[in-house]
Length: 527
Image 1 (cartoon, helix red, strand yellow):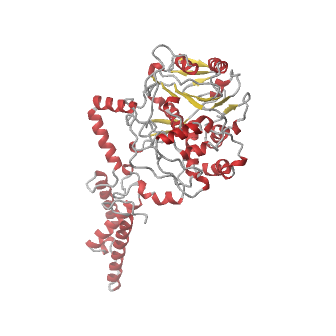
Image 2 (tube, rainbow, N blue to C red):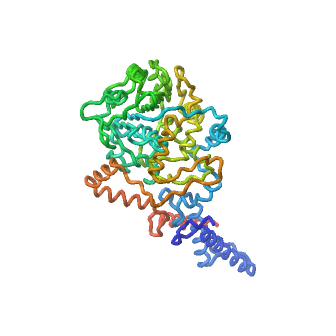
Image 3 (cartoon, rainbow, N blue to C red):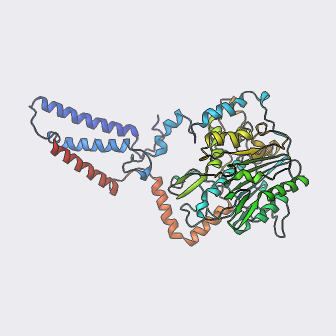
């Protein structure tokens, strides 16, 4: 049954095993039956077999090497003909949940699922805010800061899955990393790895509001305070220099910063700095103007928590990925991209939420019914039962491997609620009324209470397609006009990576076969 997903044109695993064993079995039987009637002579072992038997054994050994080699397409010399890594791992995925971090499972069951069993005793209350807005900033330029764009987009996509729409999010990216000429996968950003261009792409459905030289300290502060200049404040999504919709005392605000920083400062494009005094002054003005109900301030940079040193207004939750004198480290490097693809702190937040969705739905996770970058009920149910302290402080500290001596800083001293009483959904998901409105517009029904029922998520509707954003279309158009030949070669390379198997005329195959014959001949002379 595990081979039913392999296309008919491929040699499936059962056939490979059968050919391998039958060939060896026949050769051994012929050898034994012949030498029972003859006395063994002191001749090389390989010479005792006939030519046909040698060919059968050689073919069997080659098939064995092809079958037993690790999957991965062009990464190995011998790869099963037509058997992709995804198909070969189908059975193992069914037996065990596929998690980004195996250590997450116990924490999810102890922290998240415990609140699934009895909502009556859950300390998490949604609050009475009526709207959510978010400001996400990646302030770094240059290709080697690829990971900072990934950090920002990881938070952005979590917000979109929580039902917060683009008109409620201001996204500021200081450099055009997705369309950078050094990016081998134009218009795409991968948080975990490229995997030949087929990895998770964070640029799906993204609308960028400020980019390039528009990302400045002044622009950031004006967005916070709603003080836009002439020509700013356009309502069309994807247009530059857009401002947030009007906020009030019933609005929850998320402010997320990622880039380079130090003691009490955060750098914008290596040309100017946002200081902790600037942040404190902006938040103080927002409080006086009644522009927020609760505010969550997250900083993922070196000495990040020092940015909250001067904040002295109520109901501001502050979190930093590192303390004073500490660094914030990159997670891992992808060989295809050639850069570190994400920072450790932002990665563990994304991974834990994704793993919690997998565990709480018992592995019955399908593609989002409404497409990439839209509301996702499975994610919202996790966010409603995961508190801020666990999601942003406890889990990154326990499972994040943040680096030598790096610790997460946090404070809720002037807040009416403690962080462990506030659900992640209070800042990462739209209010219930807004979510219901989106669902009605998308003409679908959001399934609820996955942890209390055996029914899986609604399977994805194949008729629903997610169109690329204006930004992606612009990047693709630019690529096609500037580098048509590079696109053609890139497409050919991606096609070769996607296709699995090895042609008998492949140079690697011929070299491996010649090496095997040489080794076999050498061993026959020795014996």
